[in-house]
Image (cartoon, rainbow over all chains, first blue to last red):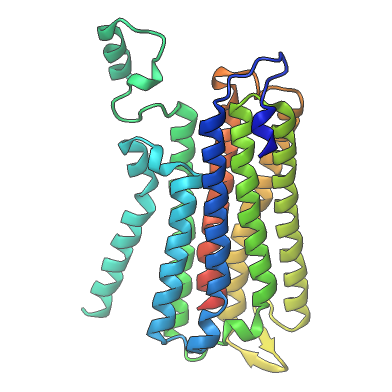
Length: 111
Length: 217
């Protein structure tokens, strides 16, 4: 937090906006704490719901937690929530492809 | 991008070219290229994880990952990578604020986080190989286990480890420029720090998924 108060370039000119940067830093710290907390929670899911691969509750909980964490990193640390529409469409490409793979797999299973 | 020029000229304002782009907003060409790279790299990881899922779901027997792999140590490595993501966003902020000392400090911490993660991964591999989990044949506590367990584990985590190694090398290159003050001159000079940040966060994001699918499920 001390960095923003001393934010200045080598020429001694500061163009930082302290209020905005402090709130950004706070937001990043909050996201970091949430990510750490969710990682901590994840460790308790397998012991609670057993080691069985087919345990639906365990799979659902872990998948939701992982997607939530990945979403937080993408949205806030990678600033995807501030990007323009087309950049977001590019970033979502693996999700469309993943959806296509799932459809193809389901089709082959139930053929 | 020709529409950008057209739109800008029609308003008679040449000073804020990137802001006029109707599709990509203020994103620079480098940032769009990095997002395209990240998207295709994400599909590579997706392919590996799908292959892992199919192999595991169709296997006759599969060892319980939590019993073979060290979950607590890997959870710590995950936390270390999340910490390095935080130091990376602070590095980007420092570059935007033109604060060279802060940029060097946060980039240095990010590099240390990456090296720490790689160190844990090397230790984990040594430990697993010593316990019989190989790339081709695997055993655990003296009993043979599905060889695909080791193959898929090393393929996915090794591919990610190579990304971390690439990220650390990329960060060291940027760190060198940061020490020389290249990225704290204002304007678009901070852009390379933003780009390495995007790559580093992507590496973190992928590990979050790998940790869940390979270690916890």
